[in-house]
Amino acid sequence: MPTDKDRQPVNLDLFVGRDPLEPERQVLGPGAVLLREYAAERDGTLLAALDQVLQAVPLRRMSTPGGRPMSVATASCGTLGWVTDRRGYRYQGSDPASGRPWPPMPEAFAQLAADAAAEAGYPSFRPDSCLINRYAPGARMGLHQDRDERDMSHPIVSVSLGVPAVFLFGGLRRNERPQRVRLLHGDVVIWGGASRLRFHGVAPLKAACHPRLGRYRINLTLRRAG
Ligand code: MD6
Ligand code: FE
Image 1 (tube, rainbow, N blue to C red):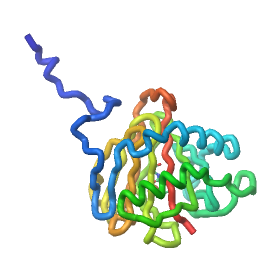
Image 2 (image 1 turned 90 degrees about the vertical axis):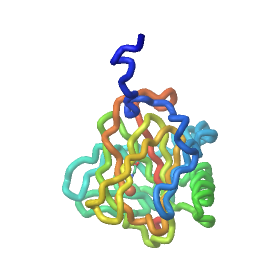
Image 3 (image 1 turned 120 degrees about the vertical axis):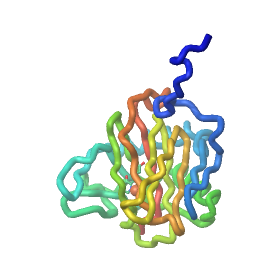
Image 4 (image 1 turned 30 degrees about the vertical axis):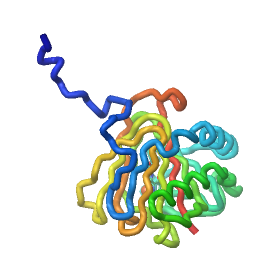
């Protein structure tokens, strides 16, 4: 006989596998799409390239303009890197920690971003900046808009690797309640067009273990910043 306990719904936040009912391609809004597992078959190439980049540029917790350390550890590659400090948020051509240029963007990153963007309806996207974010358990990203890029006609391409996270995808105004979208290893979100300035963030990471990345989630955010 099934007991009451057996009838409890599965807690999907703690379930690390895929839900077979979730579509491969999910429209999140006008110009915004989630391509589930789009990067999964290239993950070995991406992770090898990531290791190379992180040997040249260390992950570090930057400070917000308010002076508080971010919970996420970051680094960049490409001709422009995203930085934050007391002076604000911006892109710049050199790493403030070393004064040296950022490492070049691996072709595997650029190609993935171009392919995913084309699949989402942005056929001529070439990124010049890749932000690498590493989330440990508890790390999060508050709701914000991406508005430091020069030309807003280019989309943002966001690649999730490692442990699952809940992506918060809001509206054009901060007070709109965000959609909660579970992102697993290999998932790619592309947002541009009418959704380019939508507020977004990442809920605090739950503790979990991924066979390749251990307790971490890595997010690659690819942009045309300059
Ligand atoms: C993420 N990151 O790490 C999403 N946006 O999954 C962002 O949305 C982001 O880390 C602008 C600047 C820095 C970021
Ligand atoms: Fe963002």
